[in-house]
Length: 210
Image 1 (cartoon, one colour):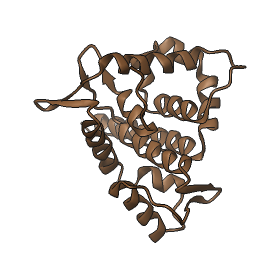
Image 2 (spheres, one colour; image 1 turned 45 degrees about the horizontal axis):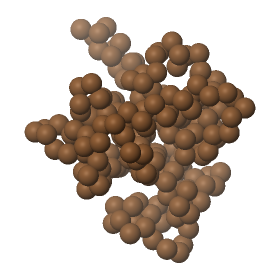
Image 3 (cartoon, helix red, strand yellow; image 1 turned 180 degrees about the horizontal axis):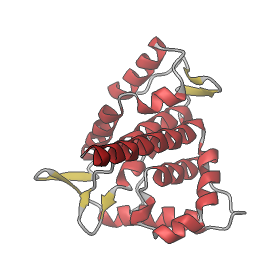
């Protein structure tokens, strides 16, 4: 079974551990999922990528109330940059994406954990991403796979499917595909790096203070 899912759903499923059989909480997953939602809105024509930030395309609206709400929020703040957008309401975006996978029947409740209904399909998704990473640089990669790989690399979701050593070997390819994934993916990478640096700085300051 091949999962025909939007980018944000695939991004979230990269955090699914098929050995522990549950969705793993990752520190920067919310930014990656929020960015994937915005990238999806660009791909569907609801947002336009401009040098200064996202611009809402007036026309048809997405049927989902949450996605429509994102557009309303951006309409009310037309000068907001991509940098601000990928961090805004990221926890709500993560919760919505998770609930969307429950509604689609991809995930199911198992106590407090979220377990997969179609683990084989999730393994296929994980394997596909590893194949894209290892492919020849001359092989064409579409925008969605580029964005997915870029977000996975930024949020450190690749390490569950590709060794850390191999990830380092393919660092330049990950960077190139991140750029090909679009401005929102690049800004998500920057936002995650800044957040990670702040967390490290805070931890060092705490250890010195103790």
